[in-house]
Image 1 (cartoon, rainbow, N blue to C red):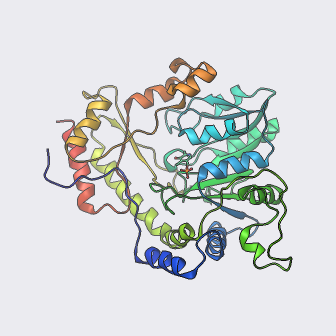
Image 2 (image 1 turned 45 degrees about the horizontal axis):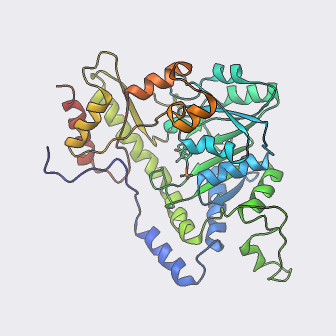
Image 3 (image 1 turned 45 degrees about the vertical axis):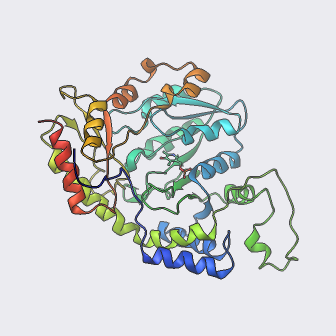
Length: 386
Ligand SMILES: *Cc1c(COP(=O)(O)O)cnc(C)c1O
C-alpha cells in the first residue's frame, strides 16, 4: 500500500500552447474541419519531409485504415494478412468492407508480425498485408514490401505506435507502402484527443480517401468556401463516411507535432532507465531499434521469464497495490470471441503470441512522468521480485 497518488498507465502531455490554440479556434468561429486541419496536414507533410507524400487528417486511425482499404478497392472475397498481436481496430476495418482477415503469429524476439508466417498465409484471395509497428519498433518493411512485390499485394501500415519511428534511417510513413496510418488517440505518442493521419504517395488513393472522408462529396467543406465554384455547390459521388478531423483537434496537433522530437527523447530516456534498472530481473526486456534507428517507445512491454516466481496477473495486482497502473498489449485477437468464433481460431495456431500474452505487462512510459515517477515504477517493479 502507498500514500502516494495513483500513477496512471498513461496521461497526455498538453501545454499552454495547445490550450491557447484551442481557445483561438473556439473564438475564431470555425471549429470543424477548416484552416487548422489544413495547416496540420501541411505540417505533417513537412515533418515527413517528402513533397510527394499527401497527408489526410482523419478523426481516428481506425477511420484512416478504413479509408485506405476502401481506396485500394478491398471487397468481399478478398483476404488481408495481419498480426493477431494487435488492437482489434487493425482487423475490424477489413470486416467493414466485407473482406476476410488472415491472422498470423508474431516473431517472439520483437512481437512484430512473423515475416515467414505472412508468406505462408498467402492464398489466391490475398489482396493486402497490414503490418503493425508493435510498441513503436519498426517491422521489417523491406521484407514485407518484397513479399508484396513478388505476390502483387498491397501494403497498408498500421503506424498507430510508430511516431516517430525509423527503419534504416527513414521515417515510417515514407517507406514504399501504399499508405501508412498514424493515431493521435489520447494515449499515443502525440495526441489530438481523437484523431489520425493517413499518408500516401499514391495520388489516386489520396483523392479517393479525401472524398470518402467526408460523405463522398466531390470536395471538402473548406474548399467549398475558397474555390471559385459557387460556395453552396457539391456533388455526392459515393456513399462516403464522416471521418474528418475538427480544427479543435488539429489545434492540439499543430503544437504536439512541434514537440514530438522532444517527446521521443524523453521516452527514450525513460526506456534507457528501465533497461538499466531491470537488467538483472527475470524479465525479457523490449528490444531496442537497430543502431542508428529510432524507436518511438509508445509502449514499454516486459515479459516475465519462464523462471520468474510471479504470475503476470499477480505482478499487475502488486503494481496496482503500489499505486501504479499497468496494462497488457494485447489480449491477442485470436482469444476474442468475435475473431475466435468467426475464423475458428485456437491458441495453438499462435504459440508465440499466446505465450507473450500470458507473460506481458506494459509499464507506464509517457512524457508527463517526472523522474520521481519513473523511480517509483523502478522501485515497485524491483519490489515484485524480492
Ligand atoms: C490505437 C490503435 C489503433 C486505433 O487508433 P484510433 O486512433 O484510436 O482509431 C489502431 N491500431 C493500433 C495498433 C492501435 O494501438
